Structures are given as C-alpha cells and as structure tokens.
Length: 278
Ligand SMILES: Nc1ncnc2c1ncn2[C@@H]1O[C@H](COP(=O)(O)OP(=O)(O)O)[C@@H](O)[C@H]1O
Ligand SMILES: [Mg+2]
Image 1 (cartoon, rainbow, N blue to C red):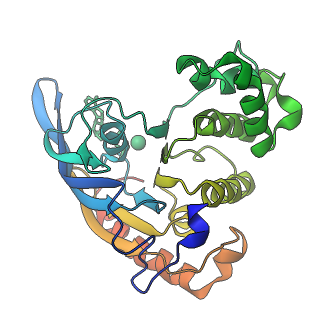
Image 2 (image 1 turned 90 degrees about the horizontal axis):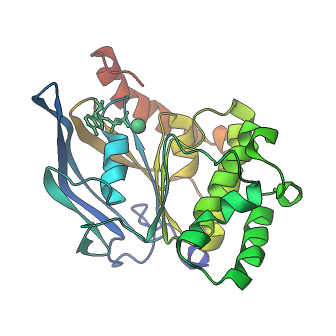
Image 3 (image 1 turned 135 degrees about the vertical axis):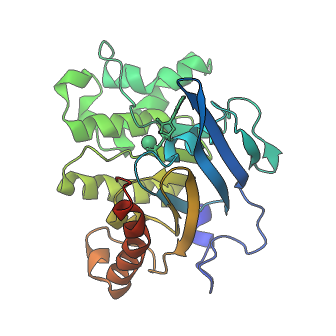
C-alpha cells in the first residue's frame, strides 16, 4: 500500500526524501579465481535502493550483475566493500529478500499448488493456513484453474507466474529478480511486466531487477543502473521520469521512453563495441 503514498519528486526520488535506504552498495567488488588466477568480476558497485523503489541493473553479459544479486541475497561475500540491508551488513542468507534467480525452475514432480507452498513448508508456516495462502497467491498471478497441474503441463509464461507466486507467497519486503522474463516471447513479456508492476504497486515491495533489455528497464524502473563490461563498474544511474501508473504497452509511445532508451544505449554501446556482449 506504500506505493500510493509515495510520489515521484523533482529528482525522481521515490519514497520520503529522507527515507533510509533499503539496500546500500558501498563500493562492492568481487574477485574470483579462474585456473588459479584471480580476476575481478565486479569492480565497484556504489548506489542505494530506497524502500519501495524499482531499480534495474543493465549491462553486458559477464559484468557481474548476477554476482551482485548473489551478494545481496547473502549467498556470496564481497571481496571488497559491503552490502547493507536496512543499515546492517549482509552477513548470512538474507531472509528478507525473495530471489528469482536466472535459472529458477519448478520441481517437476510437484503440482503448481505444491510448488508454491514450498517456502511455507520450509518456514514451518502453520499447516492450516497454507492452502488458503497458496490459493490466494495462485489466483493473484492468474492461475486459479491450474493449481492441480504439473509444470510440464504449463506454458513457459505460466511457469514464470508460478515462480513469481512461489517467491511472493511469504511476502518478502524486497525482491531480487535476475532476468526473470528473458526467455519469453515479446508479447508474453509485456503481459508479465504488467503483472509485475501491478503486484509491486499493490504490495509496496522494493525491487532490484536485472535485465539486458533496455526497453524493459525503462518500462519498469524508477532508476536504471548501467554497468560496464568486466570488471563491472557503474557507468551511470538514470532516473526514469515517466509518470506512473504506466501501461507497459502505451509507455512505449511516450516521448521520454525513446529518449531514455537512446541515452542508455549510447552508454552501453561503447562497451559492446569494445567486445562485451549483452
Ligand atoms: N562462483 C564463481 N566462480 C568463478 N567465477 C564466477 C563465479 N560466478 C560468476 N563468475 C564469473 O564472474 C563474471 C561475472 O558473472 P555474472 O555475475 O554471472 O555476470 P552477469 O550476470 O552480469 O552475466 C563472469 O565472468 C563469470 O564467469
Ligand atoms: Mg547473470
């Protein structure tokens, strides 16, 4: 509900201007070892995500986007700098976030209902309440008639909806999403984006969203963080000053949409010509 109270202020600031950040990236870097040799995957991520904000990260393949989400989720430690969640350094698995990973899948031997119930089982949520919560969430993502179906009986878009329902069921205050609609065809992508905006604005969730699709980043976000190729270094943060609520189809005809997409592309293009890939 928080969304209705927030407004886009002059600088594109979302939420109360003095609101403490939900996530702070304080010069975060990550080094890995490949064949015994160190290499810097992520250079120096430095930005904040405010409560209720929708922030996207775009950048060439391999620039450390997934690594940054892994660190935020507490699944990996940074080699330098720190990630703070509500002011506290992320030191263990961050249970306040729901994480849709790049390779997220459903358990094929479980029905839609049984898949969506997994987080409740893991958290030992009272058994008596589970079925009601599961049905409510399945309805929210438009799959009310498919609770008894198995993943193999669903389309790609429906499977994405189930993953979304499974992530949202325990009402995480923050969602990390790693290219969640990457494999969908163009029309289905729009439908899922609209759905996500609706769920986001209803729940007041904070979202950190990774995509390689500039149109998707502009459509959804309050701000877009552009990261250069490896070692991923932040090039710029663009405020998306297109009014909300946005219709994912109509927003494409907004003058600012084309301008912003061009500005983002101009920044990314240099990198791609230097050999990075989207
Ligand atoms: N656990 C790991 N061990 C070693 N190298 C890794 C590991 N995770 C990612 N990398 C490497 O770090 C770089 C950044 O990876 P990633 O964060 O997945 O990039 P992106 O999501 O932007 O495509 C890539 O070169 C990748 O191969
Ligand atoms: Mg990735």
